[in-house]
Image (cartoon, rainbow, N blue to C red; front, side, top):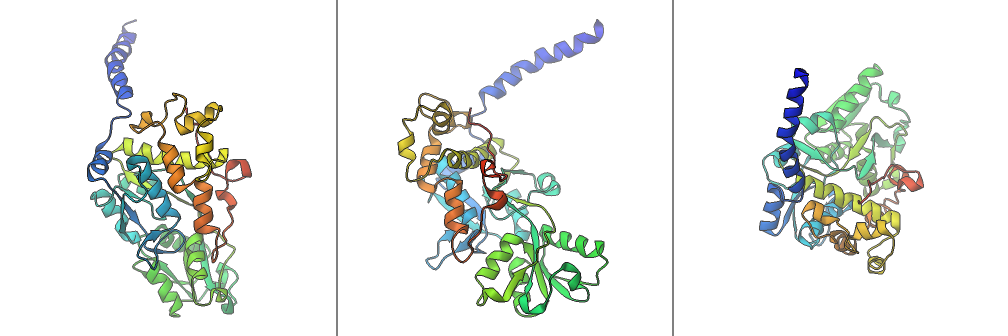
Length: 344
């Protein structure tokens, strides 16, 4: 019997703390407090990847990843424009996040074990399932990675792509020169300048660069997919509450699409009798945003200003010159991988 006394005592000691933690779930964390005090969300973004994150001719940031940041800004501040974008190349992301230069990243960043642990980061839900590919010129006649034996391939430094292409070349025993450049932009430019026969990055990045090149039809992407690249927002481990806001904002975008709630019709759903929709939109006295320290109806304004996940995808990626199909980024109800936990 004596052996049972310590576990029972431990339970009694820990229980009040557990209750306190449960009561403080919605209390603003340090990053959330900083955003609210500043009146602006600072988002680390890509400034040169059209379709995902780029600066347009009017000097405005736009793209799929940009809209994810805007959705979080609405959730916290009620305004999709209450945001400042900090342009980052791949090698700058860790320092910017750890040093507090940005509140979050939404910049084609792959979720990996080392980044999860070493960066001191919390990865949010995957917003885009991608995979690394190889781009080359149609005129080169290169159809397989084996055709790069004796050739060269350009890659950006400080990304998962560098390790992945090295592994792929070594595993096949190829005599392929891997030319490393400071970032994906310079790797692309080196390829354009003819310094290598091929270049490698996430397939979404290959598509974006090829589609916006002077002669898009001159480039092709090999069928081979070298890796899994789950991309999504990232925030500091110092503020789990802020990370929850990011996560449930993304889940809300997915859930809204599943229920057919869009920026154009969201007001029509405010009187819905469906309990699941009431919880998503924080209607009918249902708790929702209060779990996160937000207004219960926070997703109403997010959807109204930014749209649902499908709208974000469509306006940034399903349009020319990309014409990207949803594929595995379709909702689970359509055979894709996009799946949100229930709002309850």
